[in-house]
Length: 316
Image (cartoon, rainbow, N blue to C red):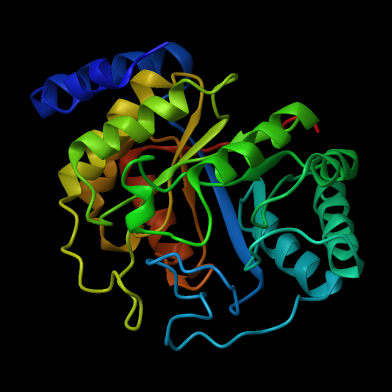
């Protein structure tokens, strides 16, 4: 498996050489024209006790996001049906919790998962930290994958979050894997990290056993009232490089363009697809962040000659 010093070399390669290598790996393992579309819904917004410096939903930050209770199952499933009708094959649900707590709300989430799977869609949730028993219950409900991002490197992480540790995040990933679910885990560009931090994070992901099934690549969305709101914009070519390195290190994973995609030009997104990205989140919102509109994405995919993936959901 790769070690961080080996991964660092990819960040020194000429970009076009790197993209060529990544595209070669991508075509070896995937249909390069196939793009999976996912929809992400915030089922419980705001009020999170964590202090993640990038997050608009932290109760510690003064943002425009208003806390709201957990959505009811019928509303969530109505959203899932609309997403499926628009072409989504994966429906993701996010709750602004520090950790999963057993009780009626978790029971409701389990019912949502069952409902999404009954629609024939993949189901993914991101609920914060969870223990082994909760992971088993999610698996029994039919959950396809659990999202729990590492965000950045272990060494840089304390500069972004102080209310939990990197080991806390890795422990949750172990519970997910042991329960038999796929791991969805990626990071965020633009937090103030270095290329070395980016390489270290990707090395950590690539060394997970097994490797993540899904690797979302996020770009910081600047939200007024958060500690990281004044960070510099990310160069779009840095996003391309991150996608390319992720594809080389994790050849079978779905590399997903996630938060911050609205800041990427069509040309930058095209380079990301060439470098190995094969999934996007679509819909006007991504939790609380803006996202390109469905019609805009449809037009881009048509112009690039890319196809929406319509194969069935991954096994539960």
